Image (cartoon, rainbow over all chains, first blue to last red; front, side, top):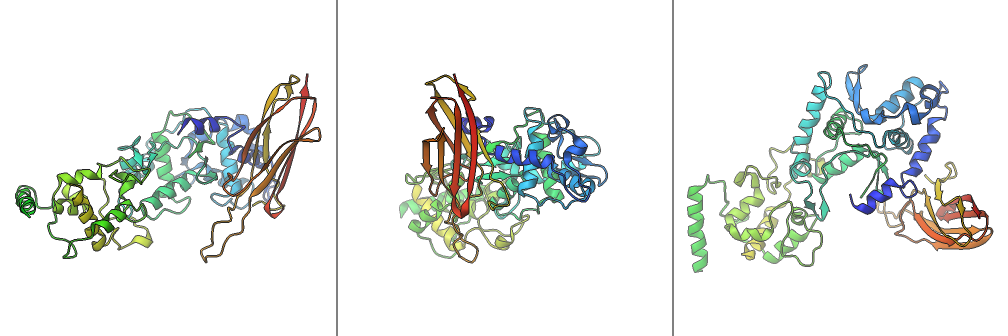
Length: 224
Length: 136
Length: 112
């Protein structure tokens, strides 16, 4: 990421994702669903209750014995607590809420722990990262582990640390999730992307966040 | 002509020393390709894709890659070795990350639009081989 | 969507206080789901353009900055400009665009 992009990200007056944060803040305290409950009714002020939460996602959801990401955690609350329909993946509302929750952990180190329970999911994510796929037969690791810093068609290859999702990507001119970004790479190597929310994608997200553990969260980041 | 023979002799030596997967001596189509068309294919970022990872003598093309050796390194290879390194580079160099441009088996999760299709046709590969050997 | 259902989001940053004669920087961001007017549907039909076309700022009723925006502007335009803090009062910001897009914002400044 260039210096100008970082400056744009770190200043609330220029980071366009602030427009989504305002929506997220409004949604946080808006009552929804048959339960007529707002996030704030259970969680209180997000600025204190959500501090550090996004740094621990994706995480293990014991009721379903699988890993879920922050978007899915929000939607579980929608369905179970608010008795409201889930937000669609990549919808303005879901991105806004995830960005707003993520914002409360900005500057905090990513805190994903691997233990006996989560190891199979982590291993599945790592295997996906190292698997050559698509017509162009490329693995994530071949670019992002073996060749980071080099130039792919003039663009520097990053190390694939997802420290700032959802991100405002200048190429998108909007906010998008890590899974949207993963889809871009899948399509680039001519592989069939998984559906939004598919366990394969969530495990890959989990592995990537574990791989970035200790790095500071930048949500909502600005990326080229 | 003399040079051609010399190269062929070198090639046979190379073949007898290596495992035999290092080169594909004969054109895939039975005929040599067109270097002019080959150059255009190499530069095309939607078809040849070469410049995404490689650089080469294309002063008019901005934003070339440096993940992989400069295409001028083809000068170190025989025509047959160049052909193998496009058709299925992993056969010549098992550690290569380069996609196989003329192989459909042994791939994972290929997008439906590309299933069963090679990246390039035999004719396109011959055009590119014909261009790359001019870089000697 | 930019329809009447959703209030347009804008963010404006400027100093709340300034000395008389000081040059102040004003930064504005407006949220807008752009459609460039150059894209086509999968059936080849042109998708109509939907962009912000005009931005203006007035300071106690006097226009101090205006911009006309055209295709190739960012979807959520960030417009930064400066003016001279002449007197205490109100700055009014107004964005307008295709399909009746309109957003306004006002901010106070005290000049000492």
